Length: 138
Image (cartoon, rainbow, N blue to C red; front, side, top):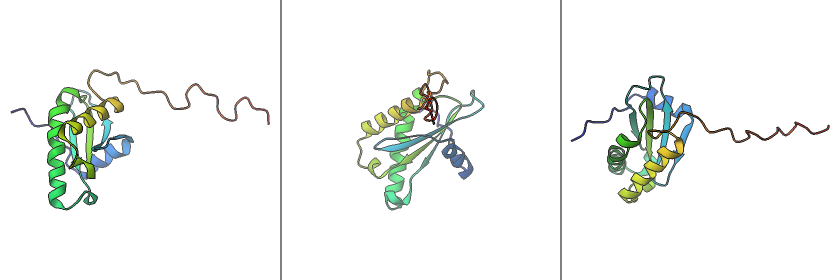
């Protein structure tokens, strides 16, 4: 049995990750990520599922499926020094487990927070393009 993954438990920790603005929505889940100043600290993960997904039984099943996917994928892919929030969606319950794992892998890659990738951020959408007002005669 592997060691358990450190968890986010307090509301303020979830809000801090959500406030960072880095998220990727996949069919089976939404992944939010936030880098921390302490890059030597192991990554932490929090789980949340809203009441829109269903009753308590459905929400708990959703969280169990997400925890299993995180335990299978993130130890080898998630970057230390990051906090992650995994949000369950209505499709999480019906989505095949392999597809959930693929969704999580894709989300880590798209957010640029998988292990081994540089910290460099992508250029802004308008990088290299002149501003709308630039160069035009008024």
